[in-house]
Image (cartoon, rainbow, N blue to C red; front, top):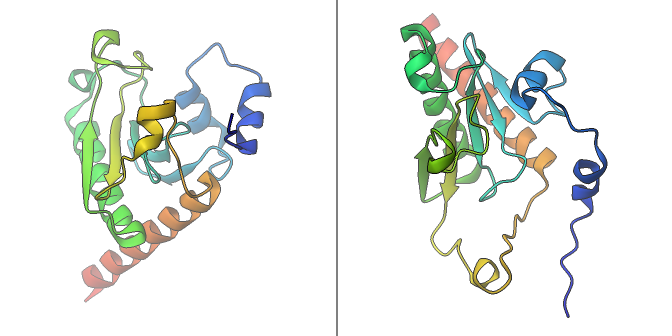
Length: 170
């Protein structure tokens, strides 16, 4: 038998579980690096998924706790989609993926793991990123630590926003 070594998972396995919404908790804690928050906007934030499908898997989350995009005010919905675009640009700049999967799972029947707080998944994809591991052992291989990925994407976001500010200032 072969073993897959993933020591970073122990912190999750032994952590106290919250009764509330962990997305709201992350937002309130103001511990962005520890909570894998990449960027905070006016109405939404970008965070890495703790259980990514691929390296760089982002979640774009409205600040307000609502179950569906239908519940968002127009300015919240606009901010959410602008954050999706910012996340795409940051992933392109920092990781050079060949494509993306973008999706929202509404309701348990649609695969929502968190039904009460809607969020958008942005999953970077590369040719050949699906290999034998998920098929043979129901295991995904993520080649970089989440903290390193978060730093790389956060730096890319800062660069993008600084470039936008410079262009506006011209």
